[in-house]
Each structure stands twice: as C-alpha cells, then as structure tokens.
Image (cartoon, rainbow, N blue to C red; front, side):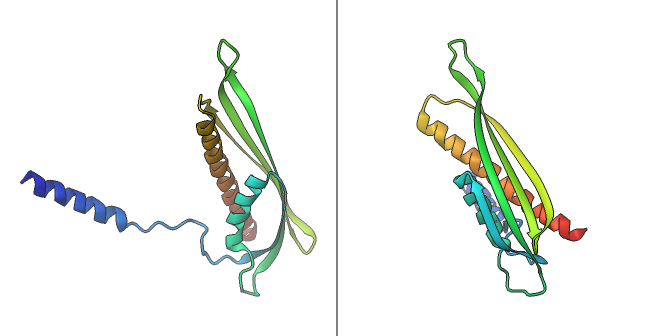
Length: 158
C-alpha cells in the first residue's frame, strides 16, 4: 500500500510540474516598437547578455512600429567589501553600471543609467569563485536588459 501511495504522489508531482508552461516575459511579445541598431561599448560579457535580451525586439517585420537606436556603455567593478584578520578578502561586491541612450531619427528620447550591485562571499577555490562571479554577472546583466526593455515600453505608453 505504501509503494502505491508513493508512486501516486510522484506521478502527481510529475504531472503538476510538467503542466506548468513557463515563458520568458519579453520573448516573442508583439511590441509596438523595434530596435534598429544596437551600439555597444565597454564590458563585452555584459554587452553580449544585454544584446541577447534586446535581440527579441530588434528588427520585427511590422512597418507601423516606432524605430529606435540604442547606444549602450557598460562598466564593471569588483571591490573588496570586508577582510579577515589576516587581510584576506572575505566578501566582494560586483558593481555593474550601464548607461544607455535611446534615439529616434537622431533625437534623444531617453538618456539614463542603470546600476546593479551584488555582494558575495569569497571562496577558497578560485574556479568556484569565478563561476559564482559569472552567474552573478549573468543575472545582473539580464536584469538590466529587462529594465531597458521596460523603460522603452514605459516611454511608448506616455
């Protein structure tokens, strides 16, 4: 009887998890604008992630949409937040600053900055520390890309 109940619970959980249809927020949505050109300067990893986010709204095939160009400048800074009694770093802070300018026919519509930070612990294993930093960089950059798209959507709503 216990085995049947266990199998039933596992089967129920399997169906409930797989029936959920997850879709990214900005993927394949019909926007009333498009990004013609993306100009990138600065940190190549951050720019690559942001560009991948913006590619979803780039060059759609509708002629009635507003066309924008975007200039993005990104910087990354890693600082030691705290040290132990020996002077070795215990915590780091990864700070990303993205400045972007949205233009339409050489008229600046939006010129702003987005700043994201994350504090994380040091790791004795340099490989694990680098992996942690890459994950944090990925998450912060994706968040900035989403914020850029949201600001363009809000600009169109006004």
